[in-house]
Image (cartoon, rainbow, N blue to C red):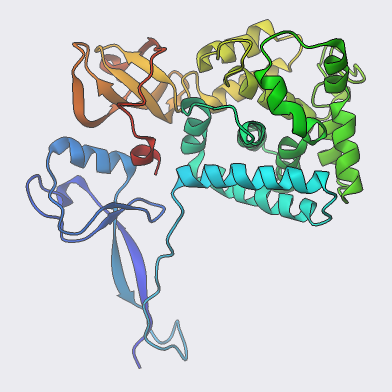
Length: 386
């Protein structure tokens, strides 16, 4: 009896592709997402370079031996369809919104569902970290009922990347992510309103905000959350190492690591998101402020680790290159100053016909500065980030 037919990924080399010829198989990325259909024509050398940069694979059927698969019947093992990563971020935001409302309605299943969402975030940070960072830095945040949920997802992604860089074990990271998702549940229903408020906060609003860590802990405790790291990270996530935070003014090592991670993640997420009362900071400016201006409030070692993980120019940053290109950073590089970018427009203002990948460690494509321009009409994130 023949063995099962399995699907094997075969990595493509540049010599497997020829300009002007139809490809004899469909091409997928490493995660199994379709890049090019079988029969499509490779138009340019740049297209081949793009596929090589992304990482292209073809799928090949391989028959397993009966020795390895006893009592098997012949079948094709399908590669399951994956939700595009950009859509996955939107789904995370919807799930977070529903979970926070569930906690406010005393849904006793909300804590279990939160842990399941945390595990999904860990998995996607492992496979799609650059895309998730791109979603934080590139996409416009409109004010609506999901604005605060989006902020919590951004916090969760940043917290996971930092916590993993700190070599925290996965159980600790999951509970820190859970804290990132739920730390503002105690003010969730009015948070979006406060973000849009153009004037200064009233004394009553300030008191309400200062008390929200305790209210959040109370909401979660009533819904069955008992993990100490989860709850204590929330209780202390607005404390500063110099003792100038709230609600208790605890200092230094009295603040648990989860709270210090959350404080840094929330501060950065807030600075790089639009508010009615101030302009959004570019990623490089936000990182500088974290490291310099806020050094008395945030653990400097933690801030330096965060910058190493993010890079000076993280995915989603819009930059000018040494050769005059206007580009969007799409991947972090080995050097925090030298990521991988996609060139969109030439120095003379003309637009490239297709995306050209630039390695910013190359002197010709070194980043000169951050560009504060709108490139939404030039850049389709779903092409680069799925």
